[in-house]
Length: 269
Image 1: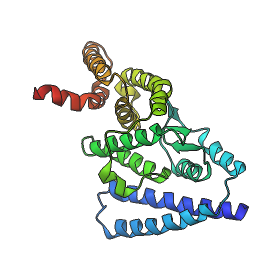
Image 2: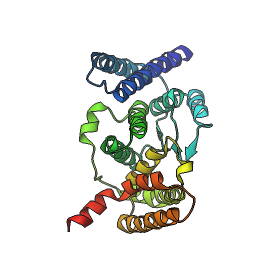
Image 3: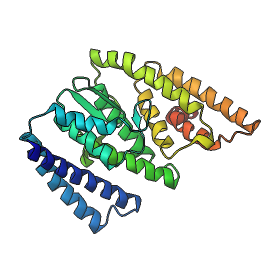
Image 4: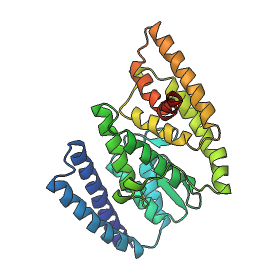
């Protein structure tokens, strides 16, 4: 079993490495290059080999726990994994093959019979893809990092899915319960944290956190009320920044992404 496990880990590491190489080329604007096409071809072959490796591997708690140990010391804000590196992504991907009960993503681990995590991951991917060309160069690179990290860690999504991301999801009764008791409290804390930021507290992951919050708000029962309150808070933050020594221009610019579609709708009437 040890040999089969190490073989599976090796191919998964190769798969993740190919995703990360594709991300580098994407950030360099070389997604149409021969090198990108060749890496993508290699990735598709590696995915087939990986699938076969895990079909013959019996889930073992020792191996599952070894992957979980990798995740224990990662930096998080409200369960969102920050700066996901290769080791973290490999552990997430392996857990999604090995653990038949839980699903693991960059922002949480949840029971596989709960569909909200799939929908939230898809909504987050959608926001990342939609905003990749709307932000500064460094933020664009960070968004690309997260898109490829999600694809690399997930056992659900692939490149073809990026063209067909949904905005509405068929929620079941247990999904609404998961949203009410698990997701909404985290949304509120993350919302409060981001609106307390100053420009001095920005990190390379802030753009991803803002877009994760934007995706999460789409599941909020009172989304319109929250967005109205956020818009008021944003205006207040800009006023306070103008009369104080705190620089908040950049964080206000990022937070304005939360309300952009709704503000466009308001202006269209």
